[in-house]
Image 1 (cartoon, rainbow, N blue to C red):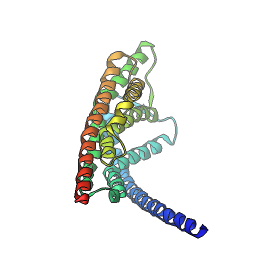
Image 2 (image 1 turned 90 degrees about the vertical axis):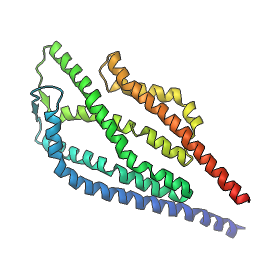
Image 3 (image 1 turned 90 degrees about the horizontal axis):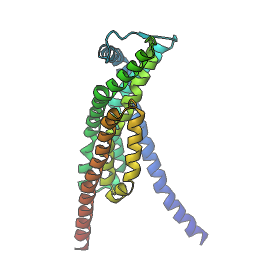
Image 4 (image 1 turned 60 degrees about the vertical axis):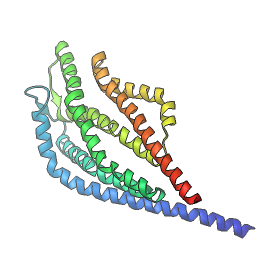
Length: 258
């Protein structure tokens, strides 16, 4: 009796170890691409820095360093962010490759199409946050500084930390429809679940919009409304993807029964 129980445990343990080994391999692939992207990011950091300084929402922006490490730390931060952006499609592909054995052939082809869109959605979010949200937030803080009669002396690390704290979260939130669509396609997320947590999701998105924008209603709405629309788009896409998954499953079950 003990031998049969031990054998079943071994049979259950082997698939788990295989999945962990596969996951480890995919993570290593992602890290390799990230490191290679980091090398490219070191070359692209200076041009991106020059562009962002030249395109600042205020004229004659003068940035200062308050530590010998500010310039080096900022240079590496730019390289990491560039590498992160370049690695997004490859990371999505590795995620798809990890779950591929559990998908049917039709689902494999359908979910593979989401990979290039991961970069597209991130870039759309990056453009929205940089050209719409960031100027509003920066000009608001500049107006308050002038109202209080304070001299504007910005540290380069503080300025870009303020910039990145706005750009990165919003850009990642623009991946929401794609992620939910992918999870719906493989059966992890359902439209009913998204509907049940709608109020909580709206509340979280509104809080995020309020936190990263100036404290006025217009700015809050300009950010919170697009985020809520993204969530509602995610619900709609989830309904479509989940419906296709159910039809494909019914078709397979009918073929198997025949």
